[in-house]
Length: 237
Image 1 (cartoon, rainbow, N blue to C red):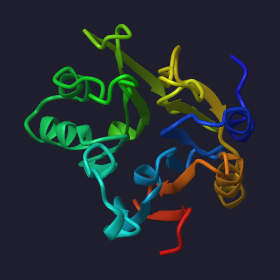
Image 2 (cartoon, rainbow, N blue to C red):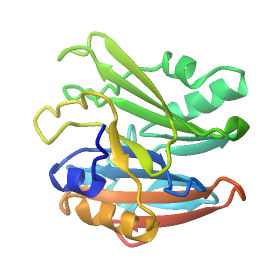
Image 3 (cartoon, helix red, strand yellow):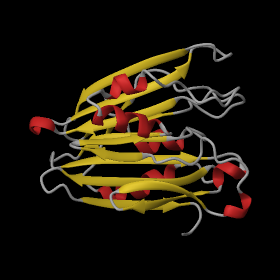
Image 4 (cartoon, one colour):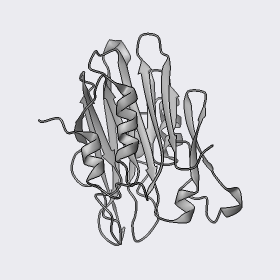
């Protein structure tokens, strides 16, 4: 399967919504994580990413303009043991609780479904990377409405080896629209380059300038368990 170019994918899509990237550097020494959010409404655009140690939080940029915090404020990342988690909603907490109680990524997501934001029924997208036994692997989940009425939930789970120079990319919407069409197909197989500085900047520059809100890219050194971060916000913080 040909490796796709992530910046090119983003340039061709005005509204992929929220997106998750999990992958491995070409030398196999660093895991790479990326999460971005976009927005069409004033409420959605009124957000910033802020680091909290090695985790990410979402905060309001202007608290006086808050109209509805549901579905837009959550913790998108968490760490449990050797598992690094990133999601587009409060299912982060569900996965954390499941892992701590002896459950799994999949068993956690089996208790959740798409977001109740009719008529879009935004998919819940989730990713987890683990490093047990020296072998890195990627899991991704997509919880999507089964029909236009949101009467049931389609659940799709994917497991991949974390191959050097390769990543997986999943996002909430296929493209812009009213209602917004949910992501379809398998998470895209993308190239992860050596230069993370340039890659992070290219991701941000490729997101639609009117709709992009925030981006976080994290490079995690598997041996030292240390991280480097690249943070981008529509609003200065």
